[in-house]
Image 1 (cartoon, rainbow, N blue to C red):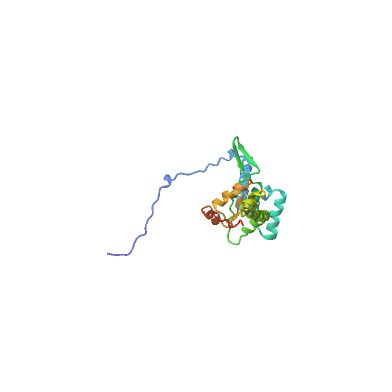
Image 2 (cartoon, rainbow, N blue to C red):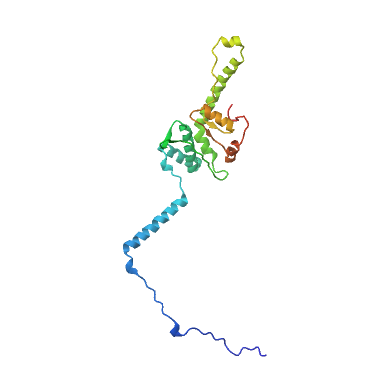
Length: 227
């Protein structure tokens, strides 16, 4: 058997008469210059919207001017992210409002300025500092309240330690209440107690989200941030 190829392979195709001519049809007469311009403007608008969505800038301009200046200066001088500072301010303002005001959604439905807020970011992203700045006035108020409570509670305890004759000789002091605006380390019992004592309400501020969630399941009777 001879393995030598003595002929070339032949490829056959359709005859010329089998080929059909395809002529594209462009109906330009259905489009106008105005339609073209509208399509271009729509594409530009969608492109701008997509760019804005990618940037996702925090809406600093919705704040009062005082807070706008604070947010911008913190970002410029302290490198605080604008969204972190703005979010901390919203939380602090809601603490100041508390239950002193409410919004009527509809008949019989009212809502207070209560928020669940989480500031999320990488380590070293300045998450804690904006919160500390926004809540410093409340920390100062709570410190003054604790000092006053300690003095009043000492008077109350001293009276309770008296005998019946001495108690009868003087008016009994009222048991003092510890009014706090902020809780850090808390238990459900302590949180309920603070909400009962403070008619305006209070805010739980945690360094970590896990700490907040663990606190909701903590049933010890101590309040590490109280006295």
